[in-house]
Length: 131
Image (cartoon, rainbow, N blue to C red):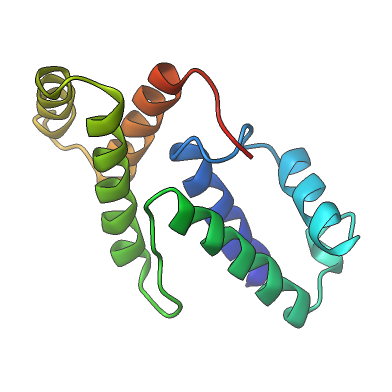
């Protein structure tokens, strides 16, 4: 489903602080700017491909290169890696080490939870997003 993929990419970009808002309204505004379409349910498969590629381009500019056809797990690992690199650039190495240790050593933590927590750290230290 194209709309689900677009939403997943958008939320991933939010966790990179590459977009300002994770809301449906923000996604719809992006789709309207890109294609003049006001809602994802009205996007054709060809238009969806165009939006998906635009979102991938934003990801690449922020260090996350998600390839077409990769699995969700592969995309999540790549996203966490891009977030880690971004945190290294935003924080002192010791602070990154402490933050990463605190996140990764939490018992039973999922990859998505790591991504969510990294996203919180990035947004807190970046002071806003670009989008």
